[in-house]
Image (tube, rainbow, N blue to C red):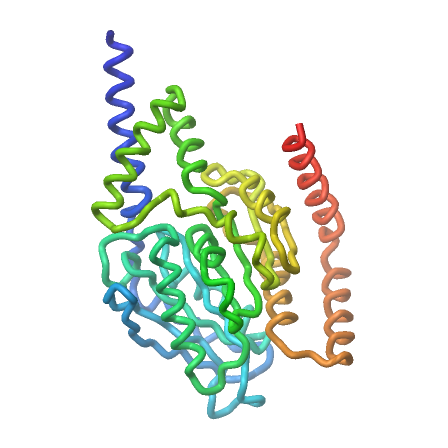
Length: 341
């Protein structure tokens, strides 16, 4: 009897924590000074600026945004590609700010913002991509309207990665995407997390999920059953770079491998060291930036050759690249063999 009471309490505890995890995780708090780049000079010696602005979301929340770019008055060429960074569920634009110097040194501008319910933006709840994909549309519209903006890419992590996958595949303004640690099917992920937390049958978990679904629909007007990025990948054609940590304890890396295998366009993948929140190593960030540099620019043939030579030089500098590629191939093949069985 005591065991049943314990399970009932554990189920109630799991329900409370799960719906909060979905729509009200801990909110990142930061000081505006954390958005500064510390006066670090670019390798290119070009002067850069940060411009802050406010943009209203589709649901009427004010989103706080920052645009890191080479000073429009002192740059050549004037037109530059832009990467829009989409942060994770308990994070903020400070997360994306860390990529600014990498991108600016490649001549790529960076736009970051706090999703509604995050950081300094208005709103109480998040939705793991359900509403955020509409926020991205508003941001893309704004960025594309600015003078000096060329091709646009999306770089998302965790919730931001899922949002990038859920975002309109027909938007031809988006020329490349990097998705780091996305989930493929949120309901499947929820079952995995519940089974990890409490040892109860799946039909009981389904009952818990039923009440969680009702709660988040009532509080945030969303349907968690529609959080299935894997449904979008087969028809997607935008060049994409998948990243996932081997020891991700929150979202297993198989979510990414399954989507990579189904993806319909040009695709790359890197399974990296670490867990869900491990900062990405510099050589991984450099690979991502080189990916954007290639697909956000209209290279002619000579430029393609130069770019290929540059990539080869970078690979020669990194002794781990070949081993990483072999490891990734082995991981993908192992996953495919298990699915075939």
